[in-house]
Image: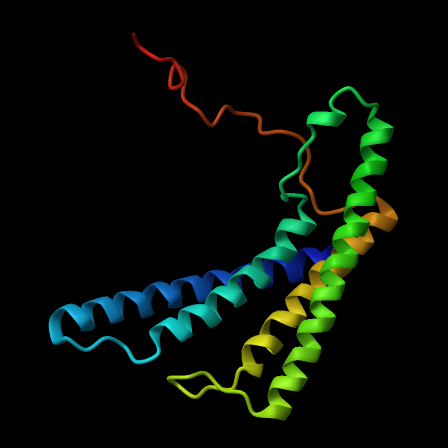
Length: 175
């Protein structure tokens, strides 16, 4: 199960990365078209909106699986490891419930958007495409969080970094 989650997380992250590159190319083409030919790409903002929704949904599984979500541990620094582990599992359960709810409602939204024939304003693309594209990664992230909540295991690669990412003296202020 863990190997499958790791594979899915990586695959979705790659999809998210490809979409980021596509968004960058679309934005660049629109800017260059506006600058050189006074003609931006038609619907560029719609494409970027679609793309960003897909990017966020595709990166959530790898963040969840590897335990890379932001954690505020200010109140638990003096707690025992067992207490922190229980709180982490409880947090994973809350994330699973939240992402499961969002995935479910997004899936229903896709069905409703398709039924009503809702389309984007400029390109006339069906809105349900974006809803459908994000509901699956959200559901996968919810399953990963549920697995972590139940087993206490995830794809986290352990511990803090072994190197200091800030160069020596970078934070020192000169008078």
